[in-house]
Image (cartoon, rainbow, N blue to C red; front, side, top):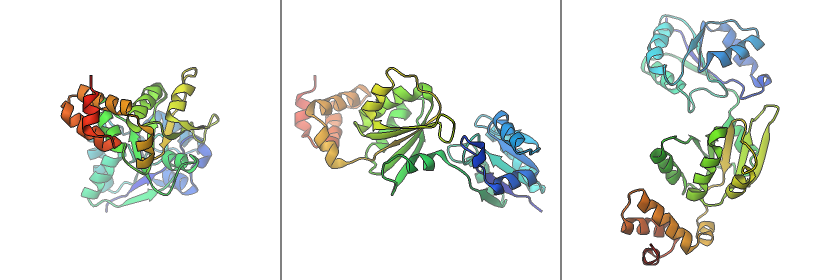
Length: 274
């Protein structure tokens, strides 16, 4: 008889945020798949849980998942966890879930904290509808394509970002999103938890004299067509077109796309191109 895969949420910072059910589940499974065993062992030690740990991260997922599935099919129960929050969301555990479904292995979720929901809840921005965008790619082409696709989304946007990339990300967001409201949620549930509610340009200015520290969840207001048309000047529209051209787009197409985005006439933008 097959065992079961348990998808277990763990604290995003404060170890006290784990649920009673999560602790009991981790105590009863046969083994635990962890994104970083060094991080998970601290949690297990805190709750006096002693279980075999198997490293399961983005570089090993393909090779390790076959062994995990085999063990579960032989009758063992497995819990998959991430370093923080719910596994399988922007996380290699996603592939393990797919493989278990393919092999008709039962899957049970043990919910826990998530940084994205926690951040949007205290952001001060609209919570009625929001889109989780995760991490931006380090590859410029993919990064800019991601920002471009999210730019017209009317729903509140949530991104994750590391401290060393924060300022460059904010700079790119200002270019693609305009100067929108943003809440920078830092080190949620930890000792130095902080929420900075400002604008994207205000955030860039704030970090001119400060070094970003800790992991960030960035909550950004969604696209407002009326506000965008009012805020963008013809000079800014021309700059947008020039950027598209520098990325390889033909001048006519760049002006056409910018005209759609800004409300200005294509001919007015084209005539001002240098």
